Length: 203
Image 1 (tube, rainbow, N blue to C red):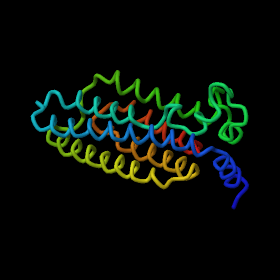
Image 2: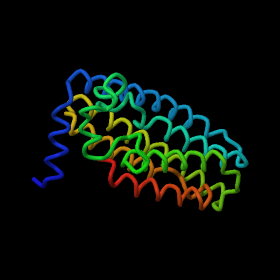
Image 3: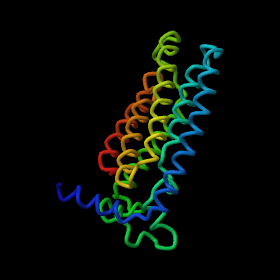
Image 4: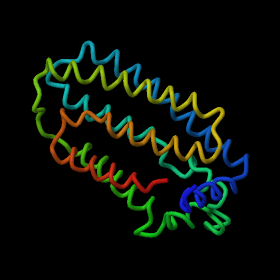
């Protein structure tokens, strides 16, 4: 085991089971909420006129991002060490920098993540792809996202804190990859790449 791996393992082992279960419960709730939205998106796509496909792609991407485990309530470290303890003793802060520091791993990630969301929201350009191609891409994106959220929820039950942090990092990468950037602007693709780069140090 490398020194870094040992540090992460020690940080994870210091988490109380109650904090771990609270984070897992919040993530599971978000997963189930997304699955309900995905079902609505699937049914709506069937009758959607071609001129609404770009707007649909934006809404789907934002919904995917909005249900990812990025909030403090989905992090066992924030639950255990935040608020009254003001991050004192937090193993994530010790290994990645405090989340409220400009150059910490989480701060760099969340800034890139928020910029990606802003860029998608403000994307008012036209699709480069035809409507037929978009109707091929979007169902595949929805189905793959459903599978990813189902797998995430199922993996939570037996996950240790170390497992959970690894699962979160993997889930974030998978879902960011599933954003239908082909149907959005070049800036969205660029912002997505910045998020993927920042995720290398997420855990």
